[in-house]
Length: 553
Image (cartoon, rainbow, N blue to C red; front, side, top):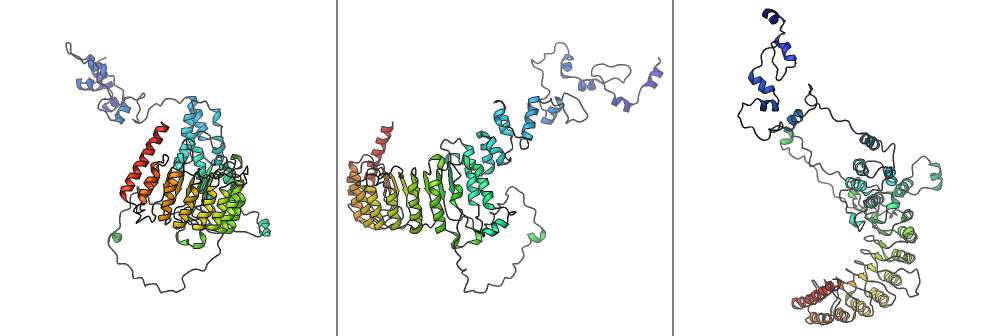
């Protein structure tokens, strides 16, 4: 074939650009490739082969990905060259991975017990299951702590698992206890309706029935409930205000917003002379009998108060009512039946007076395993002290009598008469009380002396708090004598009392502690004692602490 024929049959330049070009072979059918183009299209091994003879080659060829961005590196390693530089031939998933994806994505519609999975696949399933699955589905099916750890972190802002489980491992228990606490604190008891209205109104959903159903879902996992507020009957609390989104950018201010505008004139309010609302009857709160189906409940705190009430504040919304006390007294002996009953009960900041307090304390005689009782920040006085004296002593040697070890009566109205009742009970041989807190009461010097004198016959008490009780000279002498004679006392707090002006008060306490080997804490802040004697007393306490540590070692 002649050269003219070859030139006529040669395709155009545009067509040549669409035909793939070889990297190393040049024929007469195509225009010759320049040396620069050959180097640009050649592969890395070919470039090294084209080096002239005698040139010293590097030991390792440079990597193609050196100096490339992430996107360019992906394009350089693509398995298939395509028009779309973002496309790559992904490897086909394994059948096991596809099965796991199907189970996880359809777990809500087709649930499967996790025990059916092989152990080496469980971490993958637990890490990928969504935490938004409904609780009626996940509660009975999922027992592994990895899932409930994620669920708790996604639900609550602060998660302290050690306050629910001493070992810090039971995340499922922590989640359901926190969830049940929120459920109880937000529950509003419905108003009482006549019997004929209840029978005719069948279509209306009963809030109490829904509450019992939700609580039954969490009841097998609840051991402790700390209720910080209880909503009275008929009150609807406003939702908590939404926190501002600090990460969301603010819109730019308009010209009208940027220019300061004068504040509109507001007329001052007219004076009113009858602005106090009319008193309303105090409404009852949730019936503690609804907690009886919780089988393992052993630690219960009920605070008859409100936290977030906003502008709906009324004094009548705060405090326990006589009906609440009656319901609580009926429910307390039945709580925690599967675990042997309550071991700790706290009713703080609830306005509990003597009339209601005696009802509740009498019911506690039916709790044989009760160990800790907290009635702090209430309005208890002498009648309640006599009822408590019967609770902490077992004069009749009854088999099911509770052996209370911790009693918190801080910030009540106990006076000298109360100290006499409690002192007689503590001096009885059947008393098992080891911790007594009487902070912020009204014992006075006479009551403090009476109580400390009775304690000289006691051997079980190890921790005593009499701070802010207006103790003076007589109580100081009784305290020094108690330090000499009590064999097991380890901590006493008599701070914020009236020992001012007692020049020999520090010396008496020092002499009482000289032969004491068990005391490791004696709190004397703001008691008016001389600093010199306070330093000597602290030296004796340090000696006892070091001796206790040596004995433990």
